[in-house]
Length: 494
Image 1 (cartoon, rainbow, N blue to C red):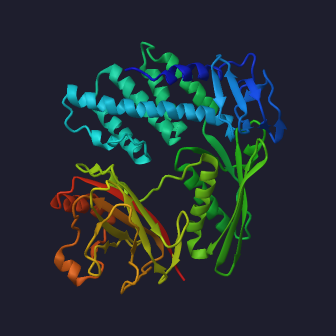
Image 2: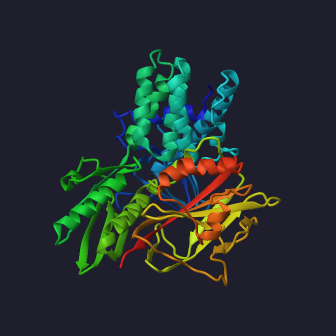
């Protein structure tokens, strides 16, 4: 299978990390051209780049508008740094890897189409790739699952190598360098004839240099050791979920040579039922404070706002959110229903934030809109899933049975001047709002139930309903495609 030209570049690029005789381990090249206002930041110092000056992996470069700055890598290739930006040198590698994974995504789609034609793989889910080839996280994960499924039946060694290589590349796009490295090492062991040895060795070298970002979480200062331990455990668990961060729990590992790049410190203050977590994230190599947060909350919801802090820390380091471990994974795995790729769906609430918080009985408003084919009408179905597992249909309802919606039009639920309001009720905990856009009406609750109940209860077992029940409803409604939107919020106790 042909590989993008960037693969050859990447291999040569990787080899610069193997060379240790002349350059330091993290030197990636030298300044080739520096014209205009350019500043190179290294370990808290501002340096003026000059031709021939070494460039290191952890450097940051600020290039003014109209400035020209080029790095010559150890292999002789040159990379032009965009003008008018501040760019971590590390991003050069990440962008190159992203280009590789983009190529793998397209290659896998072409591979599936060929496989379906040549080997009559009727069950191959080409649709999961997305009609427009969109590289969203859901499509990537579905592609990885599909590769795993094909690998179980595939016996051709050459095809197995190609599939594994594509799988590893897709993990690169997710930022999970640890898992990608494991697969590349498996590839190396399987490649008996050394057909891909140079490519694999080069990628292993670059991943070793880049590595997972390593963070140490210092136990937060608190008069209550149990409270400190709880916060510490939640932070360690949540920050490890994505596979993008290596979490260390021992402060002495922050010493020189430990490999720790970031340190999270903080304290917990509490009085009666009120608690506040204060935290600071520091990049150890340069001493830069990357984030300072203070999150207040109630003692009964300390897990909620500790998870908020974990999300903020993760995003500050990786630029990505912690993967949601939510109930909607059951929807993603339904067979026979393809994504409605022509539609982008928006869901929002009357409060902002990664995980908005509402008190019990507080009023809630849902905002929604979609961007699709301007010549078509679509149908929106909205469900809620409470922390106690109750699944309710919110829209359509006995108040508003017309759920046909227009393209690029903003709607609210309840609508303006409605005769009803939404109030948060039930048990404290995480709530989900799920919006499903379809080309035809999707019937979830029967007519009798809709008349008898204002917001019909669809199930008390969300996992079973979103897996089996929803699929049955889709089949009865002749739904072949849909687009799912999900938002969540936290209900707080008194």
